[in-house]
Length: 246
Image 1 (cartoon, rainbow, N blue to C red):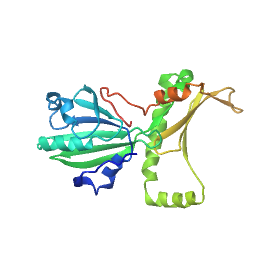
Image 2 (cartoon, rainbow, N blue to C red; image 1 turned 180 degrees about the vertical axis):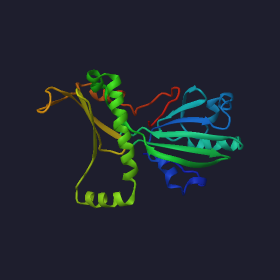
Image 3 (spheres, rainbow, N blue to C red; image 1 turned 90 degrees about the vertical axis):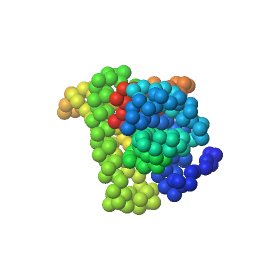
Image 4 (cartoon, helix red, strand yellow; image 1 turned 135 degrees about the vertical axis):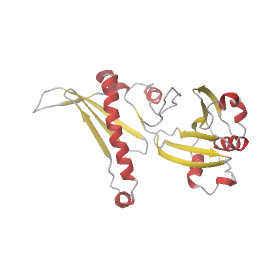
């Protein structure tokens, strides 16, 4: 990876430094203090120091993409030009296994990270064909509620310290959330920072001797590209009331 310069004003901030560790970024930018301001600015005039590309604008949100360098430095300059305004950027990297969303507020050229969280992604296209979209979405909403609750516990020292020792001993543990009804079941396992491995099952026999048949994903020579295209984490397009990490 090409090393990119870090501005003096935030070079000692480790959280901001991490923005330069990945190669591909998406950014949603809005002016919180004046939702009409960005519509009066040519988005190409915002991009001065980075290699970002303007994609679209909807409901006061500007959407930028980059394959090398975060929009952060340009937003800092923009907030200097409009020191009385408050800008908010939601910036996430497109690392499938370690995608992270950062929400940063800018005022008079000074950035402040207000939130950092995993930008979760998962593949459910093959499950949806059997369970249907409504059931799949509802099951995943429940599973992600538990995963997010676990994430809060996972970041506490009393929970993290034993895990570090276990990993030194090559012992690994994961969290799997099971959601089921009388016909279908999913298992959502978080094996990486942001990627959720989802398996779906169909009940073939009734209780008490129930048997669950796993829903297999059809793979082909083009499957890798298709899987990436289907990933929920990949290149979301801003929509009304969009939530990057529900």
